[in-house]
Length: 255
Length: 314
Ligand SMILES: Cc1cc2nc3c(=O)[nH]c(=O)nc-3n(C[C@H](O)[C@H](O)[C@H](O)COP(=O)(O)OP(=O)(O)OC[C@H]3O[C@@H](n4cnc5c(N)ncnc54)[C@H](O)[C@@H]3O)c2cc1C
Ligand SMILES: Nc1ncnc2c1ncn2[C@@H]1O[C@H](COP(=O)(O)O)[C@@H](O)[C@H]1O
Image 1 (cartoon, rainbow over the protein chains, first blue to last red):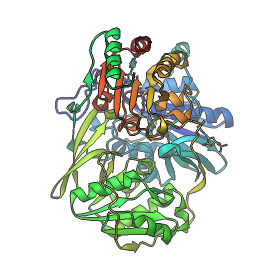
Image 2 (image 1 turned 90 degrees about the horizontal axis):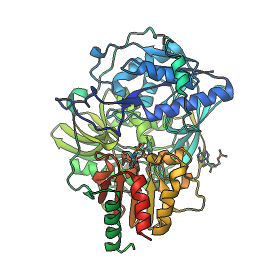
Image 3 (image 1 turned 45 degrees about the horizontal axis):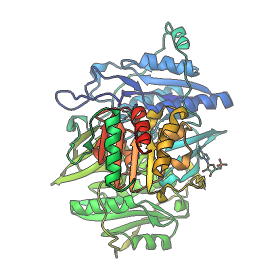
Image 4 (image 1 turned 180 degrees about the vertical axis):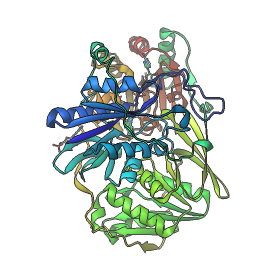
């Protein structure tokens, strides 16, 4: 059994976001990039399946600043192999899922896994999510918002989540794709020493010609949100804030 | 302009999001067709009765008794081919995520997601969306024919208008072996807690960092007579039981008081609590999207303010 996990970097959202001059993208010059939180869950789920079934896990990523380190993290976490998809940053106008899907699809065809796991969404994907696009390119069954994966022979059983805490179990014929929401356990911690051991390791490249697809990137502009109607802010140190909230709760009749 | 709206329902109960999509379609003008996939004609008729549409396009097949991504994808793709709508509207829900990308590629249409508003100027739409978990807004020009995936709660649906739209059956061959099979439905875990009944909620986010700091929030909740709740990462990490999750895939609440600490205010969380009467948010990031939805906010370290507030409450 072979599982391919797709890993993507995205801006760290607890930091301040600034826009490029043309407002078409966030300014990536200074911003921190981190592994997509849902891809992180997908990676953990893949490793858990490996531990249970002996499946082989291959982590892939499209080249960007920091992907090398991310793929090494995946190795340290327990992936069997990692492969980098080479990409000249000057060739890419947009890294949206729609634009990148044909490239990942080529990589998947090359790797021939039984199962592809990827995060349910990435925070910049205004043109749609990767798992369904990938499924359409490959003609494979797909389900997103997944919180349980049980890999069997010829099929995988997924728990798919809906609104209001409802969920269902679905059986998909392999090969299949799952858009992961949550792994069965929180992503494991990797010791820095384990990562340092991998410093000299060369991540092999996948030999495919990466041609992005089209999206609408040219027609989109970003803006910081309109703050009218936003919260009334309470200033001060912790004690002053606590006092003000207490006064507010009194005024509204909660205490 | 022809607009096709994907109708979601659970056992014949139409989802709020579906009514919102219909209201949005109405606001854009043109003819509104609602696509209903259900297990039989009786269910279709009951659903059709609830919809404010010009036509109900219906697929009735036992395979559609439960949501099955592959079968629903086949129906939507065929409905789009058959009715050739200028615009297709779906909700940002599990089905919306599953289906939109597939039909966009198949039909070669442009698509925009997370829409909070759509403006129409002839054959061009301008779509406003939330991106980066709500930290930025995007404005996109969408040429028609196109597809838009709309945030739940983006528009207030009017009181059920009811409908007398004619039902036109769409014949879709779902007999060929489907690559996805529905196995069973799973009910929500309850643990005996019903957050929808709580009048006061103290909600903690990922910033909590672990169960060791949980007592800080619990002490406040006790003082306030509030239930404790968490954002999805808090539940996923096992710091609180699943029945205490608020949001898109958790419980939708509307308490009198929703005091939240260390929650960023991602759209999926807001979906579950934005109608609360009084929202007070503590967050260390002044750009946190929650400050756009909260009524009162403070940029602070929750680990300092929570105990100070608890103490103040005596
Ligand atoms: C299909 C789907 C369904 C989902 N369903 C849900 C759902 O039901 N419920 C839900 O909550 N999410 C849901 N999510 C996840 C959602 O997208 C977000 O990932 C999640 O809401 C983020 O949780 P958070 O705000 O706790 O964490 P983060 O986004 O990581 O935010 C943590 C916040 O804490 C702040 N902070 C850090 N340190 C401190 C400090 N010392 N004091 C004060 N503030 C601090 C940070 O500035 C940050 O804003 C869903 C996602 C998907 C794709
Ligand atoms: N990952 C999960 N998280 C929370 N609840 C779950 C999970 N998996 C299963 N359940 C619940 O556990 C109960 C029994 O599940 P099962 O025995 O796996 O069918 C059902 O009510 C499910 O909703």
